[in-house]
Length: 468
Ligand code: NAD
Ligand code: UGA
Figure (cartoon, rainbow, N blue to C red):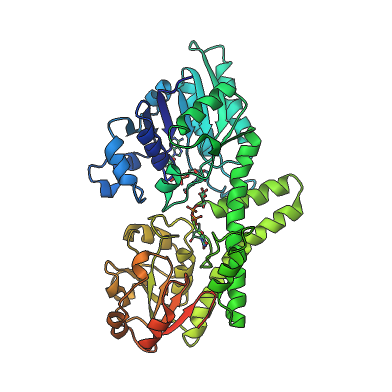
C-alpha cells in the first residue's frame, strides 16, 4: 500500500520533530500534524521560527523548509483523519494521578480519545501506528475500539484498520540527529502489508539492516525496557558517585575505566543530580505496576529501587549543600545555573532542578535562576505551590529570574550548576569571583567546572563524585 497522506495526532516533543523529519525525507507524502491544543498549533505555525513550541537543534531549519509544502500543523482533527492512509498516535501518556494504579499506571485517556476519533472519522483502510510509549498490550485496546466501530452496522462508510507499534527512541536535545540516524527502527505488528508500508517510509533514509520487525507485544515492551535500562545505568553510577565522594575516588575516572570494557560501554555513565525528563520516571513506574500486576513482586521491587535511588541522589545534594553552608541557608542568596532537565532543550518536565529549588526555598534560601532556554513563565509554573509563598512581589521574593548569565552571580553566597549547558563550561571566573559573597561555594552537580581554575579565585567547590 502506498502512503500518500499521514496524520499525526499530538504535536509535542515526539510528534513535531518526528513528523518534520518524515516530511523532510518523503517529499511525496503530505504530513499533517494535529493537536487539541490550539496554542501549541499557533506556535508551530509562527512566522518567527525561534517561537516554535519546542527547542531542538536543527528543528527550526527543517520546519522552515517543509512547513506549508508537505508539513502542516492544524486543529482540523476530523478532516486530516479522514484523508489519512496512516495515522500516528503521538499523544502524551502520563502517570495516573487518581484511582486504581495512581502514581504508577499509565493514564491512557488521551490514547483512547485519539482511537475513538480515528474510529469515528477515518475512511477505508487505515494503518494506525502507536508512536507514544505504551504499556504492553495497549494495541489490543486500540484494536478493540477500532474494531467496534468498523463492525458497527449503523455506519455507511466501510472502514478497516491495521495497528502497528513503532516506539520512538529519540532523546531530547539530540532529537533531530537521533531521528536522522536512529540506532534502530522497531516495528511490531501482524499485518504484513501495513508493516511493509511503514518500513518503506523509513527506508527513505534509514538502512534496512536497522529496521527490526517483531510482534506487537515485544515491540511495546522493548520501549519500556530500553528506558528502564538507561535509567538503571544512571542510578547505578549515581550510587557510585556517593561512594567516590566518601572514599576519595573520582567518579569520572571510575566511569571511564568501567566503560572501556566493551561489554559495559562508555555511554550513559555521567553521574549527576538524577534523571529528569517526562519519560524515565513514568515508564519505570509503569514497569513496576505491570510487574506487580503479573504477580512478579521481586521484579517490581528491583525496578522501584532505580526510582528510589534517583530521588535519594537529589535529597542528598540538598542536605550536603545546607551542611557545607554552615548548616543554614536561610536568607542566603543562591544562583541556580540551568533549570532544564538536560542541556539543549527547553523541557523542564521532572527536572531535578524543580525538586532541589523547592527544597532550598523551603530551607529559606533566595534563588536567582538562569537558564538559556527555559522561560520565567515555565519556572513559575514549576515552582508554584511550594511550601513557601513563592514569587511574591518586592523584597519578599523567594526566587528571581535572571536574563544574564554573569549577573546571576551578583551578591550570591553559592551557585549550583544543575544543567550541563555548554556556556557554563568555560566561564570567566575572574569576573564572577568579585560578584560573590565570601566564603563562596560552587556546587557542581554535573561535574562540568574545572576545579583547579575555581580554587585559584578563592571559591570553594564541591563536585558530584569527587566532593570538595
Ligand atoms: P507532549 O506532551 O509534548 O505532546 C503530546 C501532545 O498530544 C500534546 O500537545 C497534547 O495536546 C496532544 N494531545 C493529547 N491528547 C490529544 C488528542 N486526543 N487529540 C489531539 N492531540 C492530543 O508529549 P511527548 O513528549 O511528545 O510524548 C508523547 C509520547 O511519546 C509519550 O508516550 C512519551 O512517553 C513518548 N516519548 C517521548 C519522548 C520525549 O523525548 N519526549 C521520546 C520518546 C517517546
Ligand atoms: C530518554 C531516552 O534516552 C530516549 O531514548 C527515549 O526515547 C526518551 O527518554 C523517552 O522515551 O522519552 P531523554 O529523557 O530525552 O531521552 O534524555 P536522556 O538523554 O535519556 O536523559 C534523561 C535524563 O538522564 C536527563 O536528566 C539527563 O541529564 C540524565 N542523564 C543522562 C544522566 O544523568 N547521566 C547520563 O549519563 C545520561
